[in-house]
Image 1 (cartoon, rainbow, N blue to C red):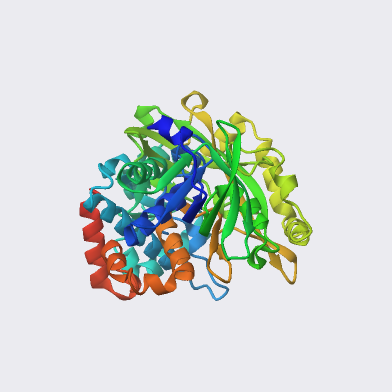
Image 2: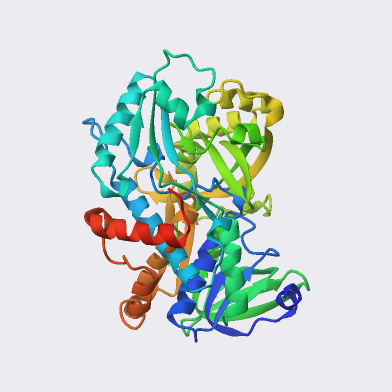
Length: 501
C-alpha cells in the first residue's frame, strides 16, 4: 500500500484538494465523500503518514475538550457572575464530534473505539479561599445547564482523597482546596483516530491520498479554480494541480499557504509559534493512583494553552501520566518544519499586526523566555505543586507539538494574539483554511461543518441534508436548550463509543 502511495502521480485536476493529513482534512474528506461519493478528492500530506504533527497523540493533551475542566472557558465577570456561554458552546461542539465518530463505527468505517477514545473523569482543582469560592460559583452556574449535569463539587479532603489520591498524598489537612469532577470526560488519541479515518479513505473510497507530497504555492486562476505547485518529496518531482475547492489543514503551514493565495481575507494574519514539553511517567504504581485529567488555573501572564494539568493518558493500550505543558519556543511552524518559517512569514501585509501583538504581549515574551530556560529539576518543582513527593527519576521530558497562535489585525493595537481556532474563507467560498490551536482536534467536526456551511451552503441544506442528519442527528438544534435530546445523544454515543462513565 505504501508503495502505491509514493509512486502514483496526481491528476492535473480535482474537484477538491485537501492540504495536510491531520484530523481536520481526514474529517472533511470523510464528510464530503459521504455527501457525494462521486466527488474527485485528493489529499496531499508532506510527511510519510497521517497525523504526524498536531494530531499525533503526544503532540496534544488528548483531552476531549468538553469545557468540563478548562477554567479559562468560564471567566468571572466584573459583577462576580460566571459566564459559561463559551463552555456551553465547546461542550456542544464536542458532542457533535462524538456523533460523527459514532456514525463511523455504525457504518463499519472505523473499528475498536477503545483504540482512540476512553472514559476519563475531567476535574478542575484550585487552591486557596479565593479560587475555591470562584470554583463553587462556577459549579453552581454550570449545574444549571443540562450539558454539565452530574458535575460534582467538593472541598472535603476525604472526598478529594477518593477522587485524586496521588495529588492528596502528603497534603496538609489545613490546606484549602476545591475540585469539581465530571465523569463524562474522555481521553482521546487523535493520532490513532485520524489514521483509522485515513485507512478508510484509502481502502474504501475513491479519495486519492498522496504522502510525501508538499503543496508549495496556491494561485487563483481566471476561471475561478486554484492552481497549486505540488512537490513529490520522494522523487523530487514538481507538478501543477488544479482544484475547484481547496482546504488548507496544514497546521502551522496553513498560514504561509493561505498568504500565497492572495485572498483579501488573509490580509493582516500573522503567526506566533509556541512549542511545548510534557513531563511523562510510565511508573504504573503512580498511574494506578490517578484516574483523571486535572486542570488548574493558568499562572499570571501565561497563555491559556499553558494551563497546568496532570492527566491520565491511554496511548496504544498503555497508560501513562502527563504533566504540563511547559512552553517552549522555536521559529519552526511545524515540528518537522524549517527554522526559517517565522522570519519568512513576515511581510508588508502583516508586519503591523505582528509588531502590535508583540508590543502588547511583552509579559508573554518574558514568560516564554523563563519557560525555555527551565531545567528538568525546576519543572519537577512545578509538578510538586500537584504531587508533593514527585521523584525526578519517575518522569521524563517529552517534546509536544508545535502550535502557531494566530495574530490578527487590530485597529487599536495594530495586532492582537488569538488563542482559539479560526476558519478563514474567501468571499466565493472556494478556499478555506483552519488557523489556530486549542480546542482544535476536539472540535474538528464542528469546524469542518462550518467550512461546509460557508462554502457549500446550498448543497448542505439541500441534497446533502438527509445524509447530514444521519451523521449528526442533533444538527441545527441547541443541546443546551433540549435536555431530552442531550440525554438521547449522550446515551447513543456512549453505547457506540463503548464509554464507561
